[in-house]
Length: 545
Image (cartoon, rainbow, N blue to C red; front, side, top):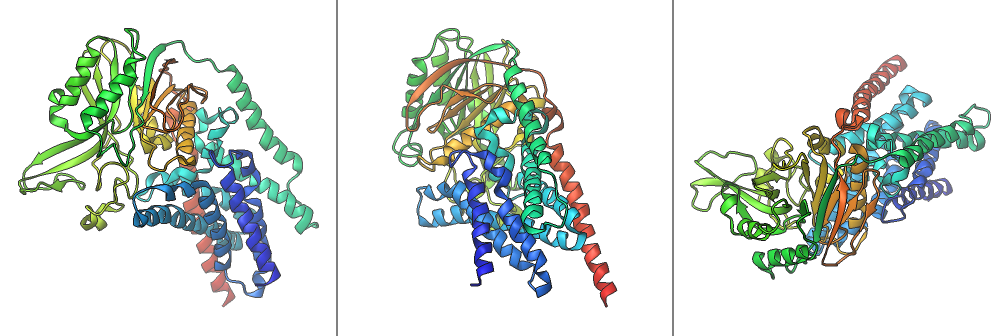
């Protein structure tokens, strides 16, 4: 390997390490993101200058892949810790790390190509626009995996991004990308091309300082509306591999749950929150009122007339007839109908009928196969990572849980859904004044995974200015205020219940109304820039003939 190539490899790996250790639960130093892309941009600039030597554009893809692979590996290595066999480990970790790194490297390579044909200044605009468009795509397509959205890294420093109530995580990603360009521009002019003009250092200082000062001012001056709600959160701590779906009966699990909640109960409690699949045996959606677990819950709540219980469960819906009603429906054994399994949440108590919501952002490879029209024949060959096997059913719209005796409305958010800001905005626009996150978080053991998952909920609290009660089967159960600060966080592998008074809020933030407008705008601009890139390429090649 030549000295120059070795130098490029080191710089590419350095970018990946800086990106990785910026993440919550790994290094928790998100300010490193402001310089994390600079080493890779140095490599890209050097390769651009050496293009006259005949270096192909795909050379940069290899360096970009080193960066993105290292980033994914450092920040999400814990995916490997799923304890369900080597095949599942390889597929889950391989898909999330290797494939996601490839997608990221392709985006960076597209920037490299656009910079060649559109010029340096427009090319660096492409760097920002393409990355934002990619992050938007990663929230919405069949292979959705927005875990490493740049704006998510600020979850470990919520006081720095209080303006997410206006921008969402897209604003954080934009901040990071622009800062990298300004720092690199200064470095380029100072050390690589001294005869050319570059951005002044004060400009980077302004772009860094202004959002930070605004955020700190908002953090110190924001006051929650006074609308107290008394909430108990239960963390049952049931082993997801050895007890949750075998080893402990559903009745034993429910009794353990009620016993933990009982220690915190009195007549003032408004809500009890339980984790994902706290009721693991699938309940029929058409007969929830008469289901034995629901009757047990109602018997427990009889002593607490105002209390509502919100918890996760597995559920099933049956369809008669020969025609398949949904893409995820499976045939019954006798062939006279169909059924769908769901990962659900329900509300019981307070004199209301049972209300149910079905999780609709499903975990790829765990709860669904991508592109169901293409892979429908593989429907039954999904690995059991989340308590249910095969592609689960969903519902088209978000639904909220209402209460007859109060004006409080709950957004029931299940696990993976808490990573999707714009998606959660649908609950808020339907009137949710509180957010309850129900999750498991025990699948990857005592690793950074559950820390990262909890941290992302802090960003949702800021985006919508909603208090959050978070119940994990194990991991971190806690309360999060409207500034993104968590309190009463539980420890890993601890059966317990916690209680706090949180504040409801009915006001809509700018982000709740407009959603991911930064990402949407970037996506439209990206289409224009890609077309311009290849149109310029075709025109220049014709002129060269």
